[in-house]
Figure: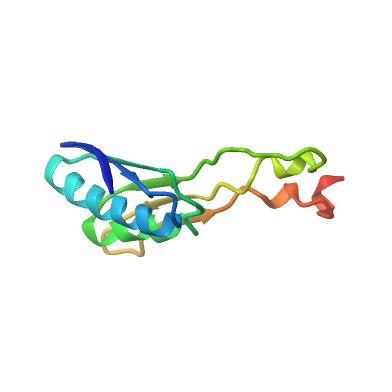
Length: 122
């Protein structure tokens, strides 16, 4: 549900559910606001993982909008859990329309070096 809204911003509360629904709704509202005002920001809260960030940045491309998407999370480590669980895997995406050329979409996660057996940890 929409928890707060201004002409250029929206805060969507996910009601403790999956992040896909809140994030999709927030992106749809963001697109309409950006088309009307020229700029907009959308925030979501109170939900689980939202999947790949590129899902949402790609939604803005047909509307000729630049977009940056990222996710944060609350850390809940239990005693005895390894600390490399702490950073999580916050996905990020940037998209930019490119006129007659193919659009630019960068879509990535941030968990690569946190895996205990990763050869990149040495």
